[in-house]
Amino acid sequence: MKFRQRYLVFRLISQENLSEDDFKLLINSLITKMRELYGVKGFIYGVPFLLKAHTEKKMGIIICNNKNVHMVRSALSTLKEVNGKEIIPYVVKVSGTRKKAINILQSYTPKDLITA
Image (cartoon, rainbow, N blue to C red; front, side, top):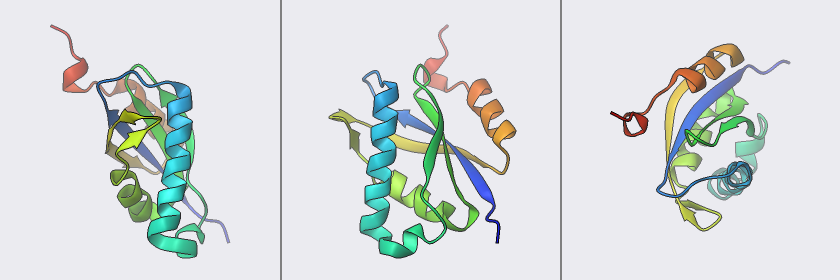
């Protein structure tokens, strides 16, 4: 049985700069939080992982199964810090294709990144 994947384009609101390692630590924290919240049931359809990170925009793409999108979103929203840096995670969009998710990531311009 093949599981369908979903791509969560997310943004981290933070006053500090984030590195590629911070995004990797975020995914590890996300997996730990999912285990705390949902136990083994959270991993029936697979573990979420990071597809791409854009450190300048503080955005990334998480791949997960379509059956546990709600679990990943709720676990992500409970994360408050990564590597000692305070963050507020925000899911921008959920996509069904990798190409569309990458296009969203590249074209998204948050209001606080626009300079006049």
